Image 1 (cartoon, helix red, strand yellow):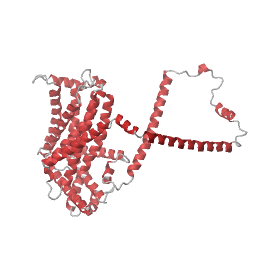
Image 2 (cartoon, helix red, strand yellow):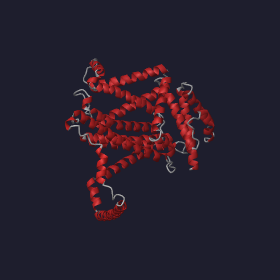
Image 3 (cartoon, one colour):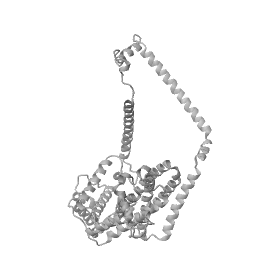
Image 4 (cartoon, helix red, strand yellow):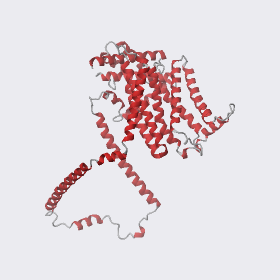
Length: 497
């Protein structure tokens, strides 16, 4: 898919860069956990930008490899074997040329050291062992990226989620290691630049499809230069504003409004004084009303009798009472921690309920409201996540770890996007509704697309219910059918919008 057009290639490059930048601060934090690594073998000296470049290029190479393998005519057995060989070979070659550059060409002592690091992991992590597992993780990310459908909505969600992650990771990195604060800022700038470029490319790709007279996927160089200039100007303006609005300038700006703040302070004091006066009158009236009722009651004596039962019996000597010790102090500490965790859980629960209620309200004025429901982190997000994990586990059980699994996941994603488009047109699929029963209603909102919708539905039912694999040619045809349906929906939207 990455070889489809120049626009798609640049979009994949930007998305891979975004993922590399998001991973960088968390990797840098991991590299500086001294007790996790063997003595003197931590990667704490690795600077941020070379790390981003290494992960970026590696991820791009893996995506290209996955795309080429998807286009190949390899059998399923050869495909699986090729994937395993690529994962192991990339990890071992990375160890050889990154950590053992000075070793001779036929010196294989580094293999023994790597194996020793894997076996004796309890002694501390070694860079070579970490690189093997991290390479496997990058292959998983490349496999996911190579099979995804690139839409403006999905790229926008990736950008928004990435902003939260880069701010979290960069903030923790700057707090824990102040020397890397400047590097964390560069990571944020780089991520926003790549994110703006990816979102712009995804939006222009959607607008170019089906437009009369559009050059479409070619993306002329002048348009590309305009896009890069827009991104650079946006980032430059943001950096200039951030450099100008320093804390000193903000305090100086607010200082011009000192008379206003003084006036508001005096007004607030008068309001507080008036409330105190009213409260004093209310308390005086309350005491005057309760005075006759409590005239014959000695409050001190009554309270003393009420709490007398809580006092220890007089026959218990002070020496017999438990004395404070390490055990009692530990118990008190545990009780305080339990209480603090309980209070924190209650606060989190309250915030969670408020967020769920707010997100569950319909917001017709937002153009993406129908699509954001499926990605909501409130409501039944945990149940949906568990259902997706269970579905993925079932796919792995039925198809194994190979191209058949990736094709099955792609078919389910295509059908899920098709249901989302139907929901946008007012025909949502019910949770218990079979796909073949939903097909007539789906075809009613996409005139002229009944054959393509039936083809996608039939393939989905074969994959999901029949546990039958599909070929790469059939998957390419399903993607083409989905793009036609999506293009027809966009044309209808433009005509009625």
